[in-house]
Length: 128
Picture (tube, one colour):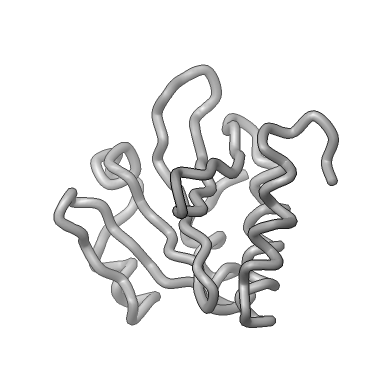
């Protein structure tokens, strides 16, 4: 476990919750890459039964991304700051992911089921 990380104990619990080896690999990849992100504070947060992994821009409460941990996939969210920021386009997201959808809040979602999906998403995000 990474010491001193916010809610670090949830990472192992959530990994054990996942019932698909491919989704486990995607989870480990996204958590690992987020741990090395510059300019973001990333951490898991339990919201009732919802397993929510959040990406905040450093020094702000702006949350451009998050993902929910399910048993067979991760549901990745482009929250309002990402949708409205202009760096991403929904048509491009749809071209990359068949599962791309827009929810009633105007956020975009993508189901991540495998390491291949997670890597494709990370390239699209272009986060350093």
